[in-house]
Length: 508
Image (cartoon, rainbow, N blue to C red; front, side, top):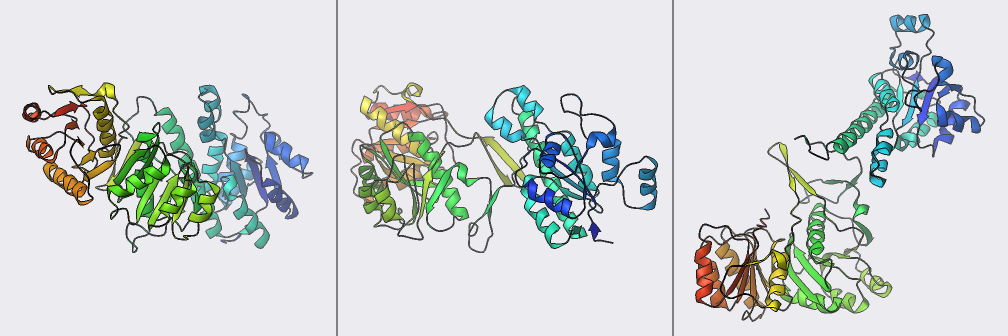
């Protein structure tokens, strides 16, 4: 029969919230309860009869609780198929059948998150619990396994609506959840041990998820795996889409470059910054960022490193944008901004990027370290006869932060703490430069005295020649071309300054 009546249950859990209702219902249904340690004490405090596992096994909990349930009288009762030969062996060895197993594992991941003490972490590697889960899930044809606190509600619903009976479909559901829990748990433990001198193994497990409005295009479905609340709190606006999250990730990555600056505002479109500016106030930074490319700003992602005040909110309110991110929003500004129901407003909680990046491709996964290198003045090597002035150094570093977050091939032009031109995603570096110059001129910027940042080296001198003709006076680039000297010689001949960083920032 596919429907089976629960007549006995083993309960051994770490977190007991929500367990009381289940215990009361099981008792009401006449289910015989077995338990261990703290769970046993919890059940006894509820006034419900429970048999200690040590009475079943004739062995006490030993080795500071490391061994409690690891015994044939426990695992025999779980793993036995309800057929004549197995039932005969259970009778021979006086082993009761166990129809329901409820487990909530030691909190390994939570322990790793709150301490570096290895002894405490190792003690939170559950052995008996994970074994109970796997055994009960394997025998799902006869046994119900509840593998975590997250499934308490589902079990209680079945107990109340099906009078203590479960179908094969019910038991398969719990088995699937059980192997999800066990595989995730083992992955977390492996990754803890693999964090130093790691083996070349890729393992990732995440059950927390958010369904998105749609994928990259409306006909594609998408799900985010992880916890968005780790990074931000959504204050207003519609549900997030796949593209929103891609752009938000890019915006947060860009703003980490400016964590110690004055007010910085950036506007991104399709992950590329199209406007970035540093100013004394947020409203001034917003106006300067918008001026960089007001056309591309339409429908963009906005981000700042300071709280949004009412003056800034009033200015932002006038244009259409997809998402606005800020560390805080003043009350009056919030009241205004939330009126636009489709505009997403996020309070940034933790904008720090993760240390590793991975994506799926070619029926596999590619992974790399995140590009967390951010150049400082000490990283710059002056390679021309003319050194950049102190004010130009600041501009060069600013431009270099911007170009790092543009899709390659990329060029960023900067002047007075403002990205006045950008070229990205081009198939040649000189085309990226031409695009950046054209954009700057289209929006009325004077390129005389501006600086240029390139995400990679110049293969020829044509780029610095074009920059000089446009009025650009200083250049920052990684260097590394066999023809670096050609660009250096051109700069020397025309009074330009050039610095090299030694670090390329390709972004594909």
